[in-house]
Image 1: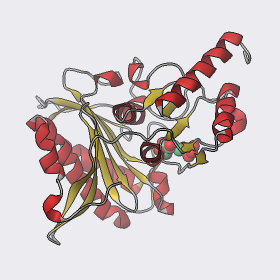
Image 2 (image 1 turned 90 degrees about the vertical axis):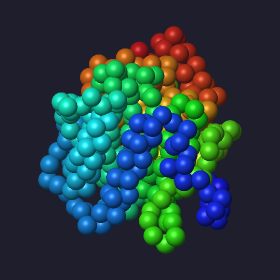
Image 3 (image 1 turned 120 degrees about the vertical axis):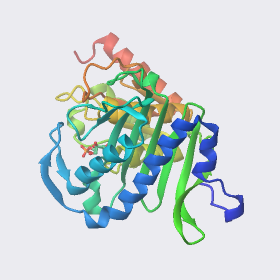
Length: 319
Ligand code: P6P
């Protein structure tokens, strides 16, 4: 990440968004304003909510509160027609919504990391209102993430490259996002790989591919947060997967709320996404909360993995 130079030379998010049409710029700005409010409230809303979301996951107090903040804060812009959240079972259809956009939201991806002060953040996908949810990722107009880490950073793409910002101060007053990486490109060759546990339940062809990466001395980086682990790959190059398992062939990550927006960002940064064979963005959705296996990283690594997977399938080595 490039150093943020003196105030006079820096470009704020507001200035950078001038490249976009006004309504999209307004929506992205609003999401960023809400993300700053949520960051400030985090220490005051720790602990479990005692509820479970539609995916059967324990919710934290901040999960529930952040979800409400985003829903109220975004519907009040008048820009939203449909809003779907990982934390809500059904689509919120805004009746008066002549809004121009449909939005998918993971209000706090990796929120189980909060108690150990590890990385987590917000993932948003933005579609034209004419694209009903659930939607194919290829139809995304824009995608953005807010990463809560040592720094609070924001990344967005409107399908003209990926741009990264860091939250700083302006004249010791307000919080502002400043540009630190324009047209971010995933480094190649890469250096890191991130994969979850339970190796004995991985598909054999995936175990074989990871063994190849380890022989190539890729460094293991796994933080239990899709947004944080993908951010590492975007900055260092390499590979991340939440793969298919023998007992969970669809993996864990949700297509609409996690995989589509993050895959668009990775592909716009010169990387590649896959569900094992073909881009995540080409998956025809079957339900709002469906899960898909997720593989992202440098193009050459995803190509190598898909070739290996195809050979194993053709050789029927394991079936
Ligand atoms: P595991 C967070 O809960 C999440 O949905 C993703 O952000 C992350 O990649 C994954 O789950 C971590 O799962 O099984 O390693 O705890």
